[in-house]
Amino acid sequence: MRKILFVLLLLGFLSPLKAQETYLFAHRDTCDLYLDIFRPADGAPTTFQGRQKPVILHVFGGGFVKGERSDSFVRPWADILNKDGYTVVTVDYRLGMKGYKMGRGLSGLMKAAKRFELSQELGKEDVFAAIRFLADNPQLGVPVDNLVLAGSSAGAIITLASAFALANGKADGLPEGFTLKGAMSFAGAIISNSGSPQFKTAPCPVLLMHGTADGAVVYNKLAFFGKGIWGSSYLVRQFKRKGYDNYCIYRFKDRSHDVAVYHQVLWPLEKQFLEENVILGHKRTVDALVDDDSLPSWGNISLKDIY
Image: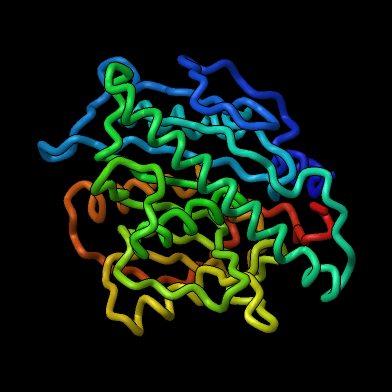
């Protein structure tokens, strides 16, 4: 029962909650895309040591199959951020795997590789469109020059793909000179059909949370003939090789994909990253193996539970 509940939660089947503000940011052939804005609580401190706190733009999870931008899991986490003085924006994106019937085993994965990469790229395109909308509407009071992208599961994949694109000079449709202030990935990776992702320049400060036994979004890498998915552990190895020194990775020993919904319980680690790496701009590196039996667990979630 717990595993079923977790799958429902992860895939966003629980009902969304009413947002403070909702705006249409893009028309697509298949759907209209909206974003919600949740403002800081009255009296909450919006600065830290004299510097403005960033906006957090969150991208929901759901395997590119299902999900809601402000579902009943995301909103309690947004409340924590709002009470600490952060503005939170949640966004829609097109679900590229919705309706796709994936075959089993390696052959099924190989055939689905293009569709997975397309889903990642559609999500990135839609997130960039949301950022552009906010930039084009300054009256909304959401400064995109001080923005941290965060995501869970499929949303974390989109988050890391966005940071990767910007590090490689691919800022299609974004304001000139745009950069992210940071990226927070809860069980994320980068999908590529043209070999392992190579960062040409250092990405923005990155926070990576991942279970070492994740059966849904690979922790290290899963690749054949240049097609595959490269997870948090692989990306950090590349950071180390290239001398990038502004990232934090927390490796949760023997944990599965439940790390994708650890937003609330890991808030102290997120807060430290936001304050030190992002707001104060310290080049701070953390590589920690976490073995904590008190953290919640809903059992292992695999691709067959999603597709």
